Image 1 (cartoon, rainbow, N blue to C red):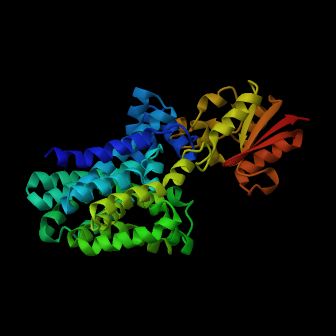
Image 2: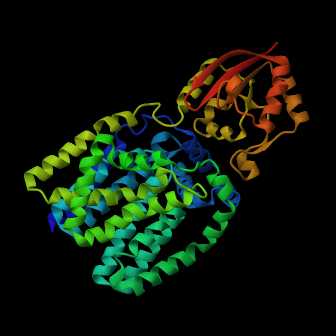
Image 3: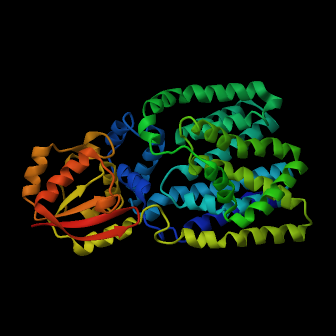
Amino acid sequence: MIRNRLVPAVPALAALAAGLWGLTGPSFWRDEAVTAEVSRRSLGQILRLLPEVDAVHGLYYLLMHLVTGLLGSGEAALRLPSVLAGAVTAGCTAELGRRYGGARLGLAAGLLTAFSPFLTRYAQDARPYALVTAAAAVSTLLLVSALERGGRPRWAAYAASVVLLGLFNLFALLLLAAHAFPARPALRSWAAASGAALACLSPLVLLASTQRGTQLSWLARPGPQAVAEWPVLLAGNAWLVPPLAVLAVLGARRLPALRTAAVPWLLLPPAVLLAVSLISPVYTPRYVLFTAPAAALLVAAGLDALPAARAWAGTALLLAGTVPMHLQQHAVDNRADDLRRLRAIVERHARPGDGLLFRVSEQRTIMGAYPETFTGLDDLALERTGAEAGDLVGDLAGPAAFARRLAGADRVWVVSKRPDRASPAYPVDESRFLVLRESFGKVRGWRFKGGYLALYARE
């Protein structure tokens, strides 16, 4: 009994340690800046936001609002829920492995999950993807428990876990299609539980469908590179893909019950999203992060087919192969944006009363990462903040109001995606920038990962 308890506990603790290590190393990036800004809003402001945008992240924002109230909105505080979710994922994966193939398989699967670079990357991210993965692992474990022992309470718990899964990410409901395969012996009970969960989620599905354009407009149609990228992300390194694939196939052939549960879990969600994306883009790897535990289970089953010494040596070798990726992920500028660099430039060179202009309105959300940096600057184009307007970026002032504000400024900081000459055309923002250029000249520019910052002074 003690040994069985240690199977999920050891990987969970390992995942917790991996998540806490270097937690504040990388800078906040643009999506985390949105989390930080929204979590600081009042409860009423968050509830006002959700009908307009980001309804799919509503539960996550409410959770982070509580976290901010308790711990603040710094990097460690906002990333901590994802760290804890990573520990839950590793523990549940280990327990699933134990139930399907014994303690050794479970321990190996849990450790592979705990130290997966793909999973630890999002276990240190103030976004909901690690929580989605934890919900998927919990839901699968509850399904296995309901299939083993039956009973309405267990099926009700499974249904509740599916609701939680959908509240964190609607795309994760593709896991239900994968669950249909192991659930065949109790198909009627599974269908009733799944149907009840989907009925509870239907209002969110309807609301999210009205926001699809704003939520997914940034996605592009995937090509062959996107398909090839998926196994590399799961493995951690390109050279690890072949041995891991061989082990996964061996594990699937060796344990039919695990194959029935893990193979659909691993393959169905990304295949569906990639196929749909050929018509209307909906795929990005983090949307299917929740399938990674299935890969760990299959690889662990392959390792479990080897003699004990070779199995543990193989596990250690695979974990060692991911070390370079882990080290890379902890670099300050590893995220899509290095907003600490932006903060350092402004803190060093800005003066109280300087103006601020965003050439791309959506980029204004980056101020949520380190808001104290911009408190002394006047956002010349902003009429109402996002919190006041009930959206993420706020309302822009009209041309006359902008001109009046600009007349009172001697220096203006301009944030853009690229340096001036390579900047794309955004009519609303560019009109203000052109007004600025009539009487201001560029003094200096700085690149930061994710954008370009320039200082303009009145000529």
